Image (cartoon, rainbow, N blue to C red; front, side, top):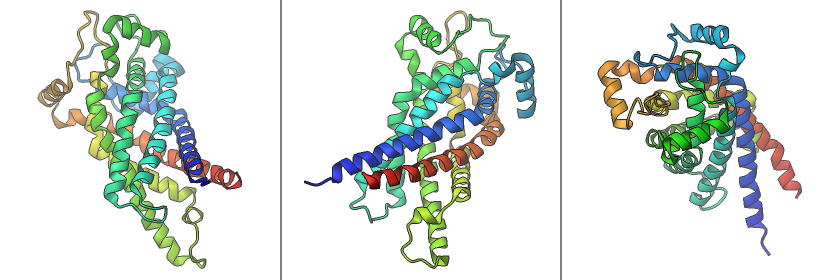
Length: 314
């Protein structure tokens, strides 16, 4: 009886495990910049409960001074939970899609199929994780100036949102979230294609023919690949992040959301802030995501290397 199916399933779970570990490591290191980015994104100049920050450095020091470490790590638990689940599911669904599109293990997928695999994985992950990202955003936006009773934690946030706004509120921002699937698609396509270039380049200089590509790459290569692919994705998709963050803000005391839907955000932002409004917080975002993506792929690729020998020994 063939053992192909069990091996394939195990390989997929190895990708999920490596992805989850990568997600946790990324959030743990870079979360304060995520808080800064979120506060810049939603500050349209007409929100009274948010402090005014001059730049990223000023924001970090101001939050640390007025709110302490708790302020810098506001929303950390849903951030860790969401990122760990997201990366785990993303790599899992992404690998499954690639295997389904490939005719055999030796055939290389085209850029179009890498794009389709990443988009499919991103859409599935969006539906699983949108409620977690909503809670994270709201916790990050709680400041000493906040008028409404603050959420005491993740559980209280979920319970209060369900009671005051209903289940549908957990999916506020899902539309730009689905558009953000293109972010992962662009990132993973760029990563895969750049990875091929580096592997081909190193293969030509290698004295060992038919060497395993994994042995040709090191942590520096993974860091460069992760940062470069992330930069391309951020520049192209950042406005969707701003739109989603603004939609996910907590309603004011009268229960009316600041923005009603995606189109309302686009119209209001364009009207009062212009194109710059769609890129608010991008400095903090790049400072967070370029090194964060490097960390993610370093951890992911190295965890995967550790798990592969275990699979071969089974």
